[in-house]
Amino acid sequence: MANSNFIDYVKIVCRSGKGGAGSCHFHRAKYVPKGGPDGGNGGRGGHIILRGNRNLWTLLHLKYQRHVFAGDGQAGSEGRSSGKDGEDKVIEVPCGTAVYDADSGKFLCEVTDDGQEIKLLRGGRGGLGNWNFKSPTNRTPRYAQPGEPAIERTVVLELKLLADVGLVGFPNAGKSTLLSSISAAKPKIADYPFTTLEPNLGIVSYRGDSSFVMADIPGIIEGASEGKGLGLRFLRHIERNAVLLFMIPADADNIRKEYEILLGELERFNPDLVDKGRVLAITKCDMLDDELIDEMRHGELPDGVETVFISSVTGMGLTELKDVLWRTINDEDNRIPSRITHRDLDVKHRVEEEDAFVIENEPAEEEQWDVEWPEEYWEDDFKDED
Image (cartoon, rainbow, N blue to C red; front, side, top):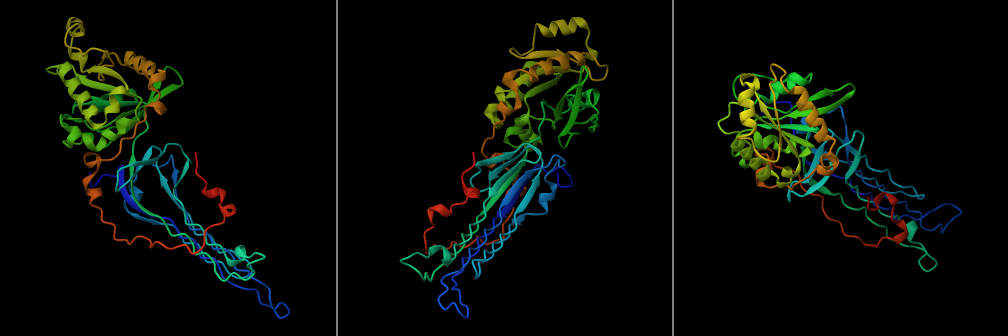
């Protein structure tokens, strides 16, 4: 995958800007010998902001920008002049990006909509100048506050494709062929396994102006949840799908057993995946006659899942499959917002080459506060968001 432009997992270092120091200055003029304190406040440090961008489909641009640092706030000056705020840094990410803490693996936030902005790291507040501390009993305060220190954090960005239907199956089960048959997508199709090396998306038209999005991921093999094959690298995309379409060829030795293997791999990867809506498609049925299909319906098919017999080459059963998928997608229990789950990152869910990324950067030094902040100075910008 080193030469692929599709990057769905990247590890970067982010650091917000530190706040500027407040000024300790006293006004002096020719005819104002005791002008009093007039030191201005320091500017706040820059924020690190995530912004969704529907024109992006990969995290490739962040692979070559591993350190994102916001600007520091400038110090205050005389005449009650406040320092300039530090420059904010905006990180553009594709819709469907989840963010995790790289050290603990804890889920932090997600960006799902175009233009959505999330403040990942807040910039340090600027220190108060000595003008803020004057009072009738303290007319010449000879101190000011330093700026708040910067916040530094290493994060993992994980892209999960937003699609209504996800295709799940072993290599050469006919997933790419189905996607090319019912949508305008042009995935690579060949007669050897693992022809699909990166996810493909296709928009499927349904009865007029309606449509839904279908995602094809590389084939899963037994043991994919433990790192075998390519399945583990792309199983994260299934977490975003509202409905899972299991695809098993008609010439499989035991359809029920293969279905249970696939379902077991998903459950081991993320136990919440078994709660999603499921449909089973028996592919390559153009080589079966009606008698064999009837025999299969009453024999080796798994229980508790709706089954459709299809052939992507001849078009057999594709209309029925669309009807079943559309009905399952629009089931209230299968709506995407209620089915998105985010398990914390652990050893088996990480990408080894990204986890070995070394940060050659010293963390910001902690600064001591000389003066407590007045309660009325708290800015609305730093209040907790819902």
